[in-house]
Length: 194
Image (cartoon, rainbow, N blue to C red):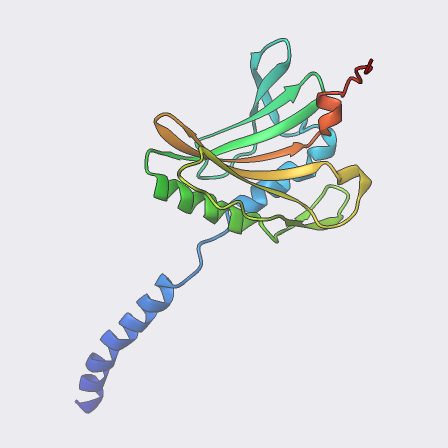
């Protein structure tokens, strides 16, 4: 009888302890595996993850993406004609609630900063970058991450977590792209001084 009373008294305490442990468990990193799949296809201009053509203009072609984070609202791949480059983009969160958007922006940054990405050639690099602290008086915040190792083929590779305001919503996006040098986008034209 004493054993039964002891069990009845101890069981609720164990249940409370178990629930406490579960609540402190870290949320899973669902974004990193998807960004890694995208990074593996970076050298191939995202050809293996590129879906159907959605839209075409003189300067861009937009495709669906075959790879998307579980909680993404939408994903796409954009091909830019001049200068020639590609961008993979996932819209991860959208809300009128600024605080909720900031929390998601911070969460996605934390998931990607200091994570290791392995590329198709089995080389691995750590993704690092500073956190751009949001401020409601600005309509945007942008944390750009790059690979920590020197590799000339990947020096332009960037991952960006962005928070933008466009009436009436705050939007959080994650993008993987090649950052083309500004002088190639807008070449400087020297004007002779008389």
